[in-house]
Length: 598
Image (cartoon, rainbow, N blue to C red):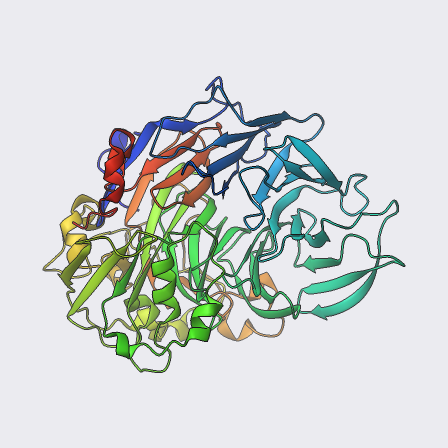
């Protein structure tokens, strides 16, 4: 965590923060909430969620926002950084009795200025299809709760489809629906289609086609969230049993899996190019998993409580300026990356899709992702090539383009920064020599708390170079990696954070050879590729770690001009990106570079 100073200052709610691209500022006039702006008493209530859609309105203000607060569901024009929010005129408002909305998702394919298709999941298990522009309720699925009686945890349209959608429940089951079909008047009968390690998929047996088309049973306990890969071919699921499972969606096959350090996994997201997955949960960590290698490549430690949302920032990705002839990506490769949604940066995807896969030296990419948690903190993280390609020598200089415009890199947005070469770190590539001598179920020594640069010459004392000195961060983008040899220098330093990771100790009588047999037995996964020990993978520290709300945070969405967060009190906040804060007063600022690289 990036330390800010004394205890009183630590508890202050921040209204702005700085990264290497500049300052992000909270726009108080762009706060969305219930019309009375009264904080919602969230005790026992379902998490506040936010969904966006662009309806391609001719006026140029086509963004729409939907959010749930308690029993209420609101649908507004979202003016973002351009104009102040007008809460007195929701396009649609619904109040439900006996059940609460828990999640929702727009169909981006079919959205127009006259009509949008919005799916809403409920705490009692039903799913409603509504059109908040026409103010219509067209269909109700699982109305009699014959399919599943448990809470809906996640609902999403299947990418590229106008009629198929997937619904996850706290029962641990997922169901595939078609909006054209009925749910029938009797409980469905199922026939096994495919079975594998900790999952089974059934088809619905009936004379005529009915919902659900498929029933997935995944892991043990609630299925907390799922996310489709950018190309729509794969599905990542996180469950209360602590497992991330990645499926080939059409082939209904398990591609790979990963286990949390402990506790359930609550949230999951994909990198823009589909090469990496980030998951967060009850171990207070963010875990980065390689889709290609099917292994954990890094963990991030900054939160003091459960991580509720993780998301990649598609607009802040640094790509090394290389000779175009070095790219080996074909047109087919680029076509594979087409399905990214309307609100993502095309220039970033085209660069990522053309990443060199045959040359021994890959194109350098820095991924930015964020997380919010029940500790009311927002963390931003950079995933850099020293983590992604630990065996490759680092070049001494890189030229980066800060990609924040959908149309292309901003004018003058590149900066040449000398990267301070780092000594090779044995623990960064997972070859820690002490691993063989560590007892199987023991927890590692205290995590390093220092957030200074991993070079003595460039260090900035105990304060975070990443947050206190933006210039230093621009010079060295490897400032967020905690080198594990620090824990050897401070063996007496205790883990002082009051959070659910508990007191980290290395005392255990179990031996390494007990780790075998049942791979998915949670008690036996620590130290395997499913769940490496803390010292066996690089530990990231956040670029930014700020307390931004009074109540637990439940939303983090990266848009082109801003970052959107929301807390359980029902306040949806807009954080203007660097250079975008002036759009409200001066519309001609819209053509200026969106990122200021310090």
